[in-house]
Picture 1 (tube, rainbow, N blue to C red):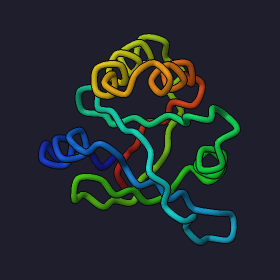
Picture 2: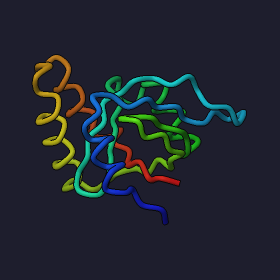
Picture 3: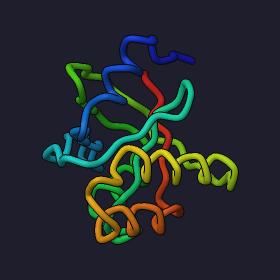
Picture 4: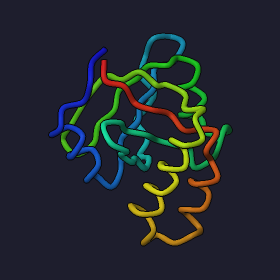
Length: 123
């Protein structure tokens, strides 16, 4: 399995947003959408602000692959579910820490969207 380099992890973590483009059923990439991204250790995570109704999330969940760009890093990725509560607790903290300046109206929905947590695995 491919892993992120330290430089890639740092650059993605420092970026305020990540451009997400999951692969559609017809094999084409969706138009990229900006989303928040957080790092926990050697892993990178995203969530859907709109919960399971988010269009990009539904597409990512169906295809399990796509392309991301953040902090000058562009990668094809695999999307993996995160059912582990301990990891989700750390991702909650990462969202609150990184994006807390935007206030609860934005951060609280991201923390509440635990069911949509996806780990980005470089391909």
